[in-house]
Image 1: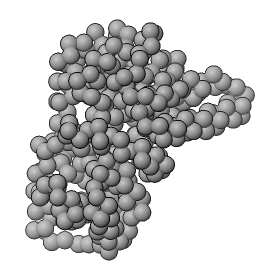
Image 2 (image 1 turned 90 degrees about the vertical axis):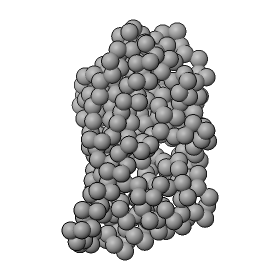
Image 3 (image 1 turned 180 degrees about the vertical axis):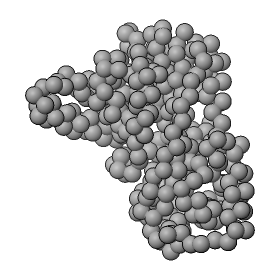
Image 4 (image 1 turned 45 degrees about the vertical axis):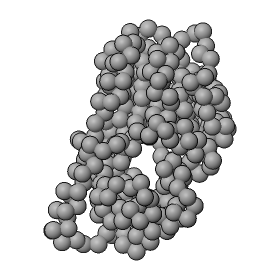
Length: 314
């Protein structure tokens, strides 16, 4: 359990939580570093696959209802990673083409899809074929950069980017998504943001580790309240293209609890952490581990805000 704190410390932590409300979001990389940071994920695809969580089940319900991701629909996924969203979507019966720039990430995604397909086939046999024909057999992973990938002649019903749209060149990402869609098709963008909640005192204390080992850290940074997270940048970007209607948003607060080892693994998958010099990164991780083990009994909870934005193509 986290240590007790006095009322003054709690009030201070709550006040500090608001200082991040209008700062850069987690998914707004500096343009000068966007390409460099985006390539770090492929360095250890197995770690990424093991450590990164998927998405809340409610998100897939909304992808069906708002974006029309139903059985038989053609879905183009941009930046599928190792298949965190691809596998559940394929299980819904969508016909997926997933474009992933990292060859190692793409290889793991193919493996995960093959394993899910095998499990689905066994399940269908156990149910006497009741669900035969619906599963991951319609999923294909293409190793390519979306910006340069030749779009097929047949348009897609849905273009999905799950925590990947911000890594695509902002000069072309919306226009190419529109080019890939049929009229009335849906652009669905999933974003993630660390917000205030979970083991709150830990995220106050751990700031000292970041200020010590990462010189880019802004002093006093705290996770924002979920209600303070601004998503207008995406809605405005889509609207400027003139090719989509109004963007509809759904939000999901998601608490995930990690052991010390699990939390360090997650941190090792973050592009900003991977880009640190080895000595700084190792020092930061050791500092974080010491705090979790020494003050929080080896376990912390992090609150994620997952956002779904759906825009219908004109």
